[in-house]
Image (cartoon, rainbow, N blue to C red; front, side, top):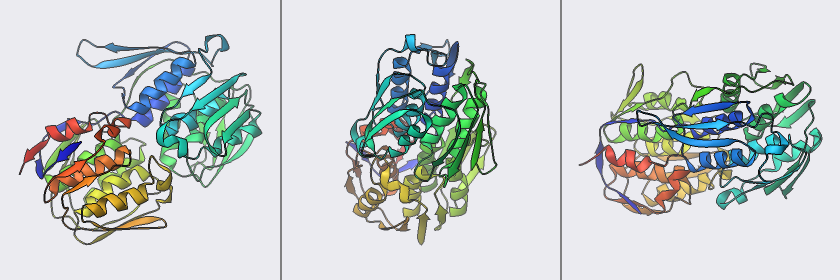
Length: 423
């Protein structure tokens, strides 16, 4: 358990590396010819799952230390997934929805049976969208739309239409796999959610030498076949999703400076800066750092369809704002590591926060946070949101199962506690 008492926040931290970018870079390195170097890597549980999958699919991977004490990862790829280098047929995805949905079409390049296995909450998360590979020439099977997944390729290039209304992660995998096919492809996407994540995918692919052309709204994407990923040195950028918790901590409990965030990033969650400013926090953006400081906070309205991972830290922010805040466009939160709509409402209610879930959103009344014992529902973002809320509580907030933060931000509590000063 972790106990968070009323504290002032003051100090500077480095943003965690983005697991979302890291996993895409691992996939691109796997598919490349030669050895890539990933600097500032993420060591989150999901990122480690991606590395394990890449090893199984034939990559040689080692973790190294630089003379400056920073670690980096070298990945010698298995160009185009050469069959002779495949080490096994079971890909252990852990609890990573991105790994399962993205690596399924990549594994679909192979003319052999590949099984993708899940653990924990991922067993109950929908993956039925991968069944669309059947129209692309692969044999694919799920357990009534849930893990595990079995796939046997090879997939064929062509013109396809897919549904992107539930997740963009399967589309990410298709975009990464189709350039290796012997023929051009076009994908038309209906109802695409989380468009910024597809822009992240296209950007990572471009860095590794593979091009995707698209309409401005990403409704159609064009992929030339016969392309090759090239091995490169790649720095994994800072994670706006994880850093948002620390930025909110500064806004409600003192001041925090976060280094290593790119204001030009394609990550959707950099929208946290706009929300903090609208809510009245003091935000100072420098060349290589962002400082957020406490001020008189007011309620806000935010449409989170493109940045659902911002919802937990924004609930924490709203709990400390004057008036009623509304966060909407978030019905997909029911299918995350927990049912986040219900989990946020339940746990923040324990803390005395007036919070109400409705079909597509949350209403939060600002007020005082009271002492409580929090069950994070084994959800890293629920644990972090409630911990930050405890910084300005009337007493201690106890977080059960704090280890769940390792899924995305393994050293979150180290960063939080190093910045805390008792009131």
